[in-house]
Length: 449
Image (cartoon, rainbow, N blue to C red; front, side, top):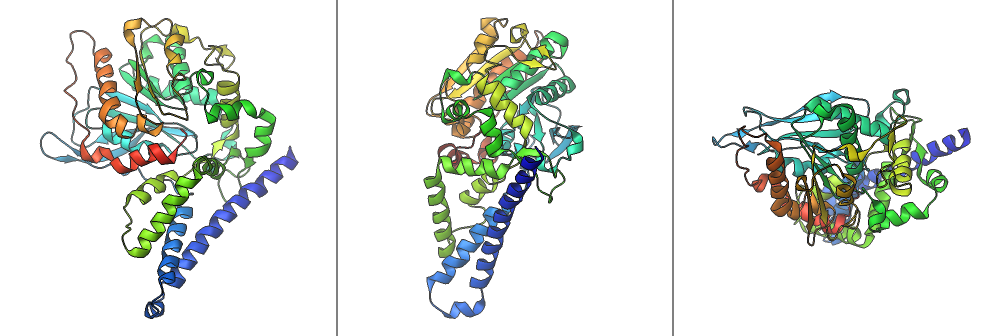
C-alpha cells in the first residue's frame, strides 16, 4: 500500500503539472502574439495564436476553479427584482445544505430539496435547474465539497455516509419537504427515504422525484454500465485511484481525480469537443467571439471538475452497479438493512429521457416496483421523448415539459386536506432558461451526473 500511495502522489501531481503547463503555454502565447508591434505585420497567424492562447489559458484555468452560482434576481409579482442570497443551513466536512433565500419575499409553500450528484462536477451544474424552480419554490441544494480540499483527518466518505447526510438534511427541513434527486443520488435518496420511513416516519419527505438515476443499472445497458461490468474492482482501483498531491489541503487522501473524470467525459465525444474549440478559436480570431458567448458559458462549467473520495467512487461502482444492492433491495447502512418496501406515505415520481445514454430508460423507473408499499395512485412515471441526460433536468425538455409536471406532482401530494393550496406556478422565464447552453450540453456535452 505505501508503494501504491507514493505512485499515486506522483500521478496526481503529474496531471496537475500538465494542466498548469498548458495554462502557462496559453497565457504565454496570448501575451506574445498581442505585442503592439505585431499589429504592423498583416499576418492572420498572430491573431490565431492570440485566440488559441486565450482559449487554452481560460480552459485549463477553469479546471481547478469552483464556479459561482450566479443566480439572477427573481422578478416578483410586485414588479420588484428580489435578490437571491445563498445561506448555509448545515455545514459538514464533505458537503453543505444550502438555501437560496429570495430577499423580501414570503416563504413559498413548496419546499424543495434538490439533491445534486457527486460525480465529478460541482453542484453548480444545476444552476439553471435551481433558477427555474426559484420563482415558485423555496429551494435547498446539497453542495458537495471537492475531496482534494478535505484533510485526511476528517475520515472517510462512502455511499453509506452520503446516505446518512441525506437523512440528516431531510430531517432538518421537515416533513413538508419535496425531494428531487438527479441521476447518481437517485438510489441513495430512495434509501434515505426508506431509513426515515422505518426510524422516523414523521420526518419523511412529502414527495420524492427521481430523475435519470441508476436505481437498477441492469435494466438497460449503457456505456457506463458496460464499463462497470467489464472492469474488476482491483483493476479499477489500480487504474484510477490516486493520492492528492502536496498542493492541496487534502494531501494524501485517496481520490478519483476530477481531471481523470474530465478526460473520460471528453473522450466519450472527442470529435464534438474538438470542433467546438476550433470554432471558438476562429471566432475569437475574427473578433466575433465574446466572454459571455455560448461556448464559454458551457465550458466554464463543464471543465470545472472536483475529486471524489476513493471510497465513495469505488463503493458506488461495486454496490450500486456491480452488486445491485439497491435494485435487489439488499442495501445496508451501518450493518442494518434498508428495506425500501417500508416506504408507504411518500409519493414517488420517476423521470427518464428516451435518448439518455448515461442512465437509460428503465433504470430509474425500477424505483416504482421497489416501492411496493406505496399505493399506485401515489406513483407516477414520465418518459420524455427525444431528451438526453442533461435535458431532463436542465435543458429544453426540463423547462417546457418536465418542470411543470414535477410542480404539478408536488402540488397534488403536498397540501393536506383543508389547507391553502400553493399559488399558481409561473413560467421560469428568460432568466431561468440558459437556453442555448443547456440544450447544447444535452447533445454534445454528455456530462455524467
